[in-house]
Image 1 (cartoon, rainbow, N blue to C red):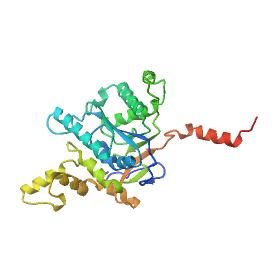
Image 2 (cartoon, rainbow, N blue to C red):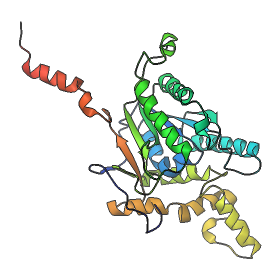
Image 3 (cartoon, one colour):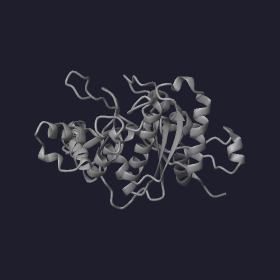
Image 4 (cartoon, rainbow, N blue to C red):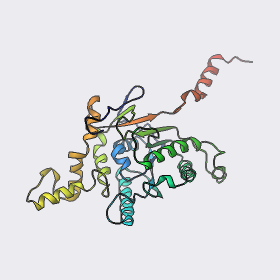
Length: 305
């Protein structure tokens, strides 16, 4: 979604502009964020996550892989480095806790799908998750198996977590069945569908901080300090990068890491935005959510005996 030859972004249904609501309309709700890699959520949803937490959500982060292929040094070094980054990421956005499932990076196919789904259902029930944020399970052009497999497992776990007959031992042990009510899917690839445009202006600094936490990989992290060091070795400097490494990292992101957010924002009269595909309560099959229609019909048509 960076170059002109890419297909235009597509949508399904009307696009809604999402702005910050200071009244904390989501007080008491639980947000479950499921990512495969340390840089997934901050790149595509750092602003929205900060916004939802400010609106009352309590958020938890579930990381499905160990990120062994992405980072400095040996495989063991990369795993440790990314785990540290994810902890810093969580702190930067006010996320309550991180759950690392530890599956091998880029090898999701070798892991039991049933096991992974069971673990997600366990966490959705344990945390009593209301809302999930993750990969779009049916988005086009996705090349990373960790992304589309995680997305598909999240989708099925959201549904099955509501059924007491799925993994009944969890319910017998005291967990309440919990079906996830609504979902935010990331718009990650060219042509990814979206129906929600979030104004992340009020949370831009937290977005930058969350991206800067990712020192091990990604298009941000430690790039600023590297550029600053190279220029110093050449006897030059960019004043915008400041005088210390952490400032350099953040200002590098501000200069070069937010082009996509600005491009997304422009058609909607905003400065910085993120795109998501949002499934409201009722989800994929809203016509099956009959309770409200039944009660409305009863109120209008029931007669006294």
